[in-house]
Image (cartoon, rainbow, N blue to C red; front, side):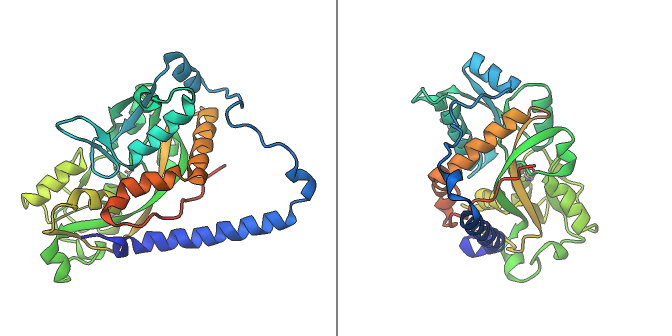
Length: 306
Ligand code: GLU
């Protein structure tokens, strides 16, 4: 089972990042003239935002968020109670709490919409949601269609296979999957990354959802599946016959998708993320979701501000 050690590589990268951040912070505090410290900081709650999306959220009194429904630990809907849980759900709730500060029940103001990997851009473009918080990797191709706040988490892409194949050394990582049948999801970076890294892999079986790939793996229709390590961790957490190779081959920074051109919306979400990093809510959200597997709370990534 994937535990702390299996998440070591992405976490190491974050530690390096954190050291750099601390170093920068130390440098700037040393060089900041004391007079600027006395200047009042802009208030987060009174700042005005020229965002059409934020205006409509305020008018509607509700926030519409696209999330995964079948990814335990990130976005998962209980089939019986219909309750949603996971790190992405907690991030969305944190955002709602800041957007509706006067409502102690702010999380009831969220309408969650299922966001498949392949329809995330479309949900924003067609104004079906206000935000996408759905294990959504920030990349240049997607930036042509949507804008991103974040990153708020850095995942690593890995392989999930039968434990016997991992333990025997048959599948140690992506370099071992040429010639094998590997499932991934349409519209994901996971599928594109796999095809680039292992051109000899048979990727003829693709699915709309990661739970469907896992089902195909369980039925032996494929030899392995690939996506972000934290998604694999959630899917396989109660299935000891499967194991993650533990050799992440791509870094996947998760962002929050907003409508392209609504810079004020992106800035507001970044501000909320930064608050959640600093006030402990982000770490708490991780601890109560992904952390339940034994994974240690990482150091938060640095926001990409351009
Ligand atoms: N993070 C990757 C992506 O955005 C894989 C996970 C997913 O499909 O949601 O494509």
